[in-house]
Length: 291
Image (cartoon, rainbow, N blue to C red; front, side):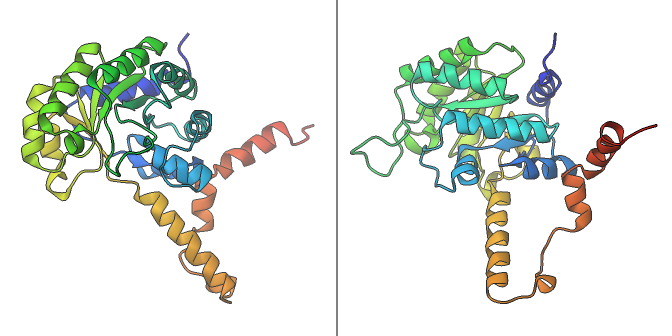
């Protein structure tokens, strides 16, 4: 019997199999997920960085736990009908931890997840530059992720920051190795120029996902022609939300009358994103006394 997430996962796979490049909506909680759905995004994207901000109000230093991340992913999935792609970081540990990560996030209803080959959290005694795992350990993590998957429609993307750590030659080597293992897509972080993407794209046969792209790369027709099916635009919504909350609280503290506060959501928007009409109908159907 198909799970409630099957339709979303099949839709996500169809996006990867198509010939378009999609910008996902960056979501971090149920309200942002509802808004992404209403506005018309095709895919939601939940990152470890926005998870850490939204759940802990902490920087992206891998201190958010797997269960906290999975719980928030489930809340997001409950609130929207879009396929949700998540950044599962390094799988919260070694290859065995990756298996647990896949299990928890699959249960939480995600449609796709990336597992990366960066050494996280940053080890003691290292410089500020991120460290990358050996390709052998990266392969082991990808194999573990695929072995832990129970729903074949769930997408697993092998993620690497090799473009900004070890260079394009190593990026191609890693992408091809992860593709050979059987991942569904390659998630690249740190590609900055068209020359770099033009070198990588022909060497990879499976779909590409790009982390936040530079202005030079922000052309969806160009990206689509290079096999890029998803390209992130950063995580501006949560930054905007932080600023709006800060400004509203400061205005109230500084003496602005509530009626004079600017930039508030309309009652109609709040009603829509909270599905107030549905709750009104359910109240009448299930709580109201009928003759």
